[in-house]
Length: 421
Ligand code: AMP
Ligand code: GLY
Picture 1: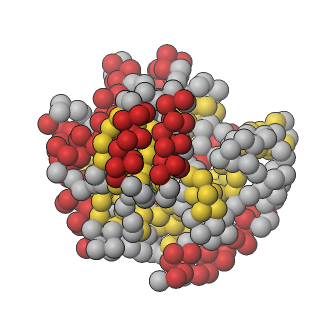
Picture 2: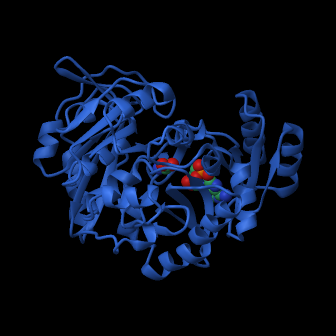
């Protein structure tokens, strides 16, 4: 079978890499893909932007693909799932209405309330003055969030009232017309990515992302600077609670709203000091870089998980198989990210890094003739897999150190939580 994969990040490189390990998959076509998918055997890039739905439909029909897998949230939130389904193409990814679970924080909050799912208390505002008055009344710490898509950068966890007020002003200036202000939760974060066919739900192993740019979880939030899987805090008892108290009620609540959600449901959770899982956010797609840590541990062929979602037979599949051990993914970024950064810097050392046994997933890269150059904020995700956590962590950093490009930046403490426990 041929698969069309929409997107161009590290997540898409990992999805293509995993799909091509399946005996059932003859080819993966990426629209538009990146420098990594360009050179992956069995993979072909076609330079069509992720929002060019007509171009994507045409490619899907021309190549007679059996499935379209949508990586990023933007095309899902604009209705790519609906457009592909309207011409009879199977698609892994929710409809436009379903994608609101990520695209609108206030919609997601309402859904969580309907479903009785634990989350932080909050309020939505269309008026900056009212939001600022609420912040003054509630005090700090407090969290200010854009109501729309912001690539993981629309959230401010404020420890000063002035900081929260500034964040409110800034979001309205940026053009957001609605924001959410919510209670600040403490505890340990975990990402649970679950497959769903709209009827039942199957969580993958949990991962832990590292969102802030700086070591020790300091500085601005990014799309994610590294991930480990499985996340130690997500014991099997905790995963059972997450499934029962969060994932299943959300899938039922989506169904009650008439939403046919077939794809990935990503729950960003805080495990509170009392040991209770609470929802920070939902995403409507695979996490990035969580996917680059989860998929290297997956033994079941990926298409055997994705197709049962689109064909609504997820309840019938056997248990998902995982290899033992642990995976650590470290993201190398362009200096300046998540602010402004340069591109077009030559990247060297990938082959040497791969020779150590690490897997190098490309995110913001581009092939320019014989040269591979940087083409984004997050440039590469380097993953090592091993039985022992400390050795795996040493292995991934050994590989990362072999990679060079001007201005390279990465966090040196990915997985440090686990080392402390
Ligand atoms: P989100 O995009 O909603 O996941 O927010 C990005 C990051 O901001 C999360 O991964 C958390 O680290 C932090 N965050 C979001 N909401 C809260 C909250 N209510 N309390 C504490 N931290 C939060
Ligand atoms: N790594 C966070 C996300 O994918 O949203």
